Length: 450
Image (cartoon, rainbow, N blue to C red; front, side, top):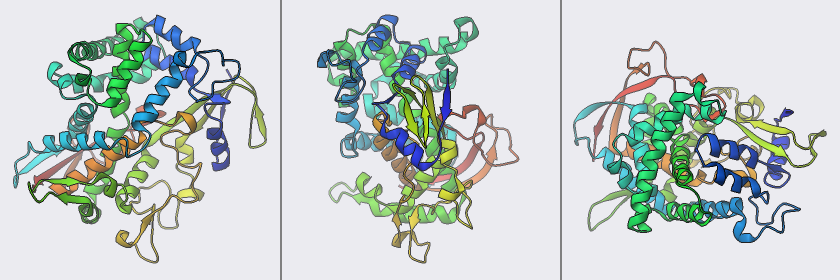
């Protein structure tokens, strides 16, 4: 197999321009759906037979495939219909805000409590995300569901390689245990009513799989992979953002002041909620979000060339594999660095453009001139369909914490709770696998304000 790496804004932009037409990823998705999600062989065969692609216009030579049989394109349409714009994900974001707020209500007003930030986000933010998409029943019926999700996540990369079962017994066992939880929930909910499956997105995914006669094993895989994708990138990125805000009291205060502008108080009930659209327009929190993605996303975006492909003056042969690594483009000094803030460091104001001041209130968020240099969600037709909801979740989680709590850093610890001699860094074990979690825990104390 010939593998080529491409870097540079122009080359990467060209790479994404032809994604889903000349450059495709179904070959890699099939491996993931088989090995990580655990789809049944018969259903993998159905996906393999459909070579028409995800786009509205089928690949040349596949025009004879009936529209109702275009399994990849129909799933892509569900993503577009349910997740393509922030407006379409507003209901999911509202639900997430409700469930995450409920988790924080467990802390008493006015009382200081100690919390491990990464552990809290992995459990409570993940639970809120799952509930926002499929409802609370899945957690009620499956004690330990979130813990099992993270065990599953820890084996996802080794499962993706398709190692023989005797080399990855524990990984396969964890996958099957988690899939059993998903199937138990699905069968109960599906028997009760369509609405019991949760959001429109969840219901449409179930209909898609049923319409192609998916086996129970594959149906479990559809939802297991959904829950993995829902959390495996958002939780580490949000954790990094919160850690940066908490460890810098001035940044914490600036963030609190900014996001308070998106806080809405309902006069009849006194209930306080964040306006998601307003929140997403604020420059500083957008910059914090973007900077966290830039520094903590490690992904080789991979495509297979369906025909000879020319990029940067070089012609790459049909059938080769082409990869665009985020960790190179996201850290180019010429693109991101400034004399005072090199590309390798987190700088909360890097993407806030102001006129001679660092006051974010008078600035605006800007990514001008960086096309092709920032692609944490991939690009082209295969760009991550959940990116809008992911952004809403992360912004909401940060804003909810900083508005509802006073927070103080206590100490950095190892992941097992023992003292650490340094702050968190990217965990090298996750390099190339998506968002990279911290290799240390932040122990903090917080006091709920309301």
